[in-house]
Image 1 (tube, rainbow, N blue to C red):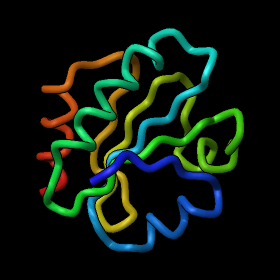
Image 2 (cartoon, rainbow, N blue to C red; image 1 turned 180 degrees about the vertical axis):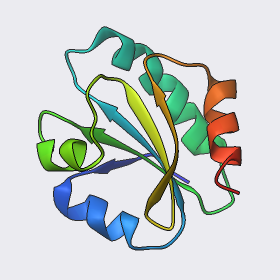
Image 3 (cartoon, rainbow, N blue to C red; image 1 turned 45 degrees about the horizontal axis):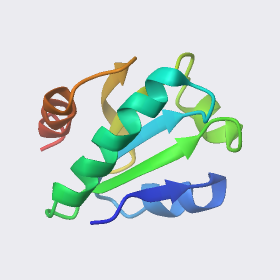
Length: 105
């Protein structure tokens, strides 16, 4: 499934689909976010089980970041049926992201 870029409006639609979603909260000026971006994109290309993989730019969509109490970036949140089940703050590995997704199964 392709990597999705969510806005405040489209994020709510994704959240209401009732599936597992991995959300990468980032900003364009954030160095660690730039390092994590390709990893999230690669993961999006590999996941085929219906899990949504997306990014939310916190500068352009502050309400979504506030809703999930994102204080530092990058922050990755895994949702199951719209509820948070796992979180990672700071740069992380692809293996850690896969592990976070496994917590939602």
